[in-house]
Structures are given as structure tokens and as C-alpha cells.
Length: 112
Ligand SMILES: [Zn+2]
Image (cartoon, rainbow, N blue to C red; front, side, top):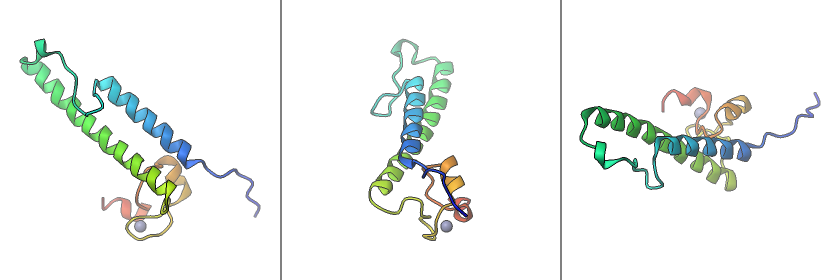
């Protein structure tokens, strides 16, 4: 069966993912160091404290995702991209297109 579909550009997908995550972090007001920028005039209201910690949890998740994207880009530049880190088997193309930064095949994804 001929396959004329162009190869998927995973680097582009990963870079788009990184831009999206960085934009979300910027929206949260998180600087390069990962700390939330905030107005000290409002720092002692418990309401603000609650909102801040929520934003910090969200920022933490975004930064973890960014690490995953960076890790995937490294693998793309060296070797191992598209292979499950658990079993070494190939990760399905559809899965990589949906989650270009994933480290695991569908079988092992649920254990991590
Ligand atoms: Zn696997």
C-alpha cells in the first residue's frame, strides 16, 4: 500500500506545544524563574493567598509539561524519540501526534 502522506514534523509539533505552554505561564504571571509575580499590597489577603497557591499548582504542572517537551526535543536531536522509555517499543504515530512529548507507549502510559 503506497503511503504518500508527508512525514509528521514532530519538532514543529513540540515547538508549538512549548509556545502554548509558555503563553499559559505568561498568562499566570510566572517569570523565567518559575516564581509568580505578584503585588505585595495584596499579599496578606487570604483570598489572594488561595488564588496564588492555585496558580502555583497550575504553574507547576505547566513547568513539568515544559520539561517533558524539552526532554522530547533532546531525544529528537539525539535518539530514542518515538520509542517507549519503558519497553523500548515504538509509540504509535497517532499517539505521538496527539501527545508529541509523551515518553511511553499506550501500554505503559497508565503506569506513569
Ligand atoms: Zn511501552
